[in-house]
Length: 126
Image (cartoon, rainbow, N blue to C red; front, top):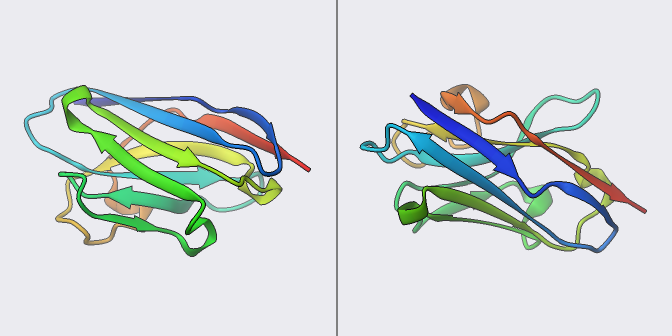
C-alpha cells in the first residue's frame, strides 16, 4: 500500500509562484511513474504533468508548458511541482498520483494511476 500526502497549496496573486510537494510512504520496492492532476470546480480532472520513475523524463500539459516544472527526489520519496507565473485559471485542487504503468504509457490518463493523495487547494486571484 502506498500513501500520498500533498502540501504547499495556498492563495497567491496572478504572476506568483507556489511549490507543491507530495510525500510518498508505504511499499517502495517498485518505483512508480508519478503525476500531478488538478480539478477546478465544475470541471473534470485533468493532467498537469508527469515524471518517469527515475526522474529523467517529464511530460507537461500544454496549458502549463513553460510555467510548471515537475521533479522528484527518490531518496526522499518526494514529488514536487514548481508553479510559476500562476494564472486565475490555474485555480483548482491539485492531486499527486502514482502509476505502475510503463513510462510513458498513458501518462495523461487518470485511470492509469492507482494511488492518489487527498489534494491541496491552489487559488490564484487576479
